[in-house]
Length: 342
Image (cartoon, rainbow, N blue to C red; front, side, top):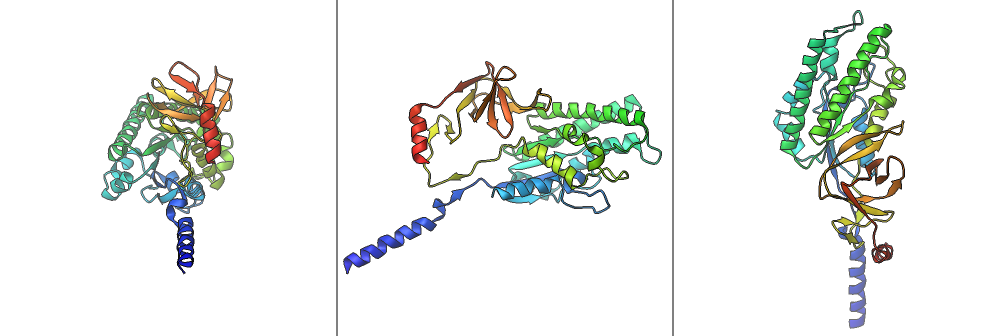
């Protein structure tokens, strides 16, 4: 009888261990807050104020990977300017949501320029250089302040500042159109500088979007993209977002310095002094995503011989081979242990 009871007890414990939460895959859940104007809200090109925009697509991708805890785009407002963004950040419920967020996207400022520089009635532009410069300085100051306020509320949040696509490809006057394009290109460049200075991510969308701008902005009387256009915006983010990796808790970790050794990893870099995380543009040039800080370590999954050597960190992100980093490969013993545990 004792043997029977012992068998039942052991079997019960074995079954329980299979279903215990500790044996299931553990993933980092992300609370995502989208801030900004009608693009963040998902305004459609045919009068429906809220549809499926790029922030919705981003949240859906996170959900597919079982990484989304919550998604909030309620604070994104149609017609909001950079001044309006600062007003939004004063609201208690917004501040509370940001304190709990792991991911924050910001797209704001385009309405400032469109409202002041473009008259849709006669397709004329205000080419007053002094006024345009003052307007840019105001927008830059407001966006810088907004980023700093989000950081003050939550220093751990991953912040992505979106640039602008050209919203007026249907303007008939080619000279006017080119002037407006130059203005938006200038502002995009300055916004990238703001992101770099404030140490947040910059999402450059104009290159991919403007190639087919008339198709994505199918309604000539509206500056909001169709769903295909919103997909392009989301894709530019997803190409540069290093999603947290799911780790089954029942598999022992193989640590290598500060980082865990992963299958498919060929090495790691240690940042000896601040350097840049880069992405490769279509023309082969490099553009900055963000700054990597001294002392940080990152897994390396690939290597490219171009541009004096590029270490691939995953998610279409690279670090250029230089004296600011140290590259190492794992020992045979570490690799053998990793294979054994997996």
